[in-house]
Image 1 (spheres, helix red, strand yellow):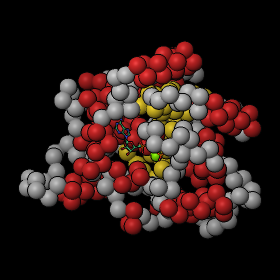
Image 2 (cartoon, protein in one colour):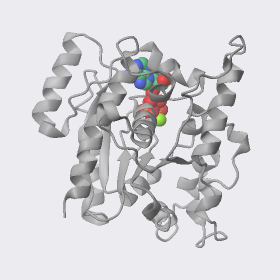
Image 3 (cartoon, protein in one colour):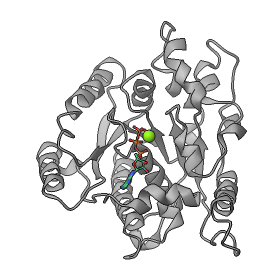
Image 4 (cartoon, protein in one colour):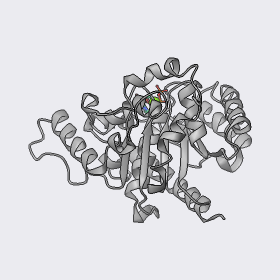
Amino acid sequence: MAGPVVIAVVNHKGGCGKTTTAVNLGAALAMGNEEYGIQPRKILMIDLDPKGNIATTFGVDKKSLGTTMNELFKAGIDGPEVRIEECIIGPKQLTKSMKEAFVRQNPERKRGPPKGLEIENLWLLPADLDLAGIEIDLATRIGRENRLQRAIQGAVGHFDVVIVDTPASLGLLTVNALVASNWVLIPVQAEFYALENMSQLMNTVSDVQKAVNPNLRLFGITLTMVQRSKLSGTVADQARKHFGDRLFETEIPRLVAIAESPLDGAPIVIGQKPNKSNPGSAAYWELAREASKRINRIQESP
Ligand SMILES: Nc1ncnc2c1ncn2[C@@H]1O[C@H](COP(=O)(O)OP(=O)(O)OP(=O)(O)O)[C@@H](O)[C@H]1O
Ligand SMILES: [Mg+2]
């Protein structure tokens, strides 16, 4: 398949691990890891959530952001042209801000940030609160569902994989993500209503397929915040029955270390080596191994 693999990370249920999964998968695929059989790839990560958490995960001060996604959404239609390069944060700056964040959060560690606290091959298109107004601003505008696709079309060719994180809604921002993507990744929190809540999401995906983007397909379902319990097992069984091989074998465990990693100024796949002492990092690296294989298959197919 020609062109980059563009994956929207979607689930309108709040707090199910979308951002954590998008960030760790993006960072792992960018860095690559021989042991896990993952080759490094050029990744563009797009934050479509007005909360703008992805920038914060890398220690980027949101006040320092220049031209924002809001202006990019309107560029050349309801607002002045914007060069997408002006909005993207590159790997050098991400590395610098991760190191600065580490020093800020850990003033007692005199030796400074650890050596591995760096990233290559990863570019971030960040969001900020300005984006919250987009749904209202664009409500009556022409082409409101294609704005993201239009904004990034000149840039995506430079990347192997684009990952779009979306907010907890099926509103205009998420629809823009689905229109600009060719694959959907759904993180599902292992809880009782998880699968029941998904029929609405699958309907939206199917509406977007029918109306604007017939190329949209399911990249995978990943179970997040899994605890060793009967309930987690039941959700996993149901998901396997429903989604077959689209369900990733790797389950992401519920671990404080995963939630706390932004405190060290970096996603857990960068901040902690994947080994038995760091099961959270190891789980996301395992997920990246599976995702990497799927991406290879997609890119090898004619
Ligand atoms: N595997 C995990 N174990 C423990 N905590 C986790 C795990 N994954 C995510 N969290 C924490 O749970 C919260 C929600 O995660 P996250 O922000 O990734 O979800 P989200 O789906 O992006 O949320 P939203 O819908 O608000 O955008 C965060 O505080 C995060 O740090
Ligand atoms: Mg999120």
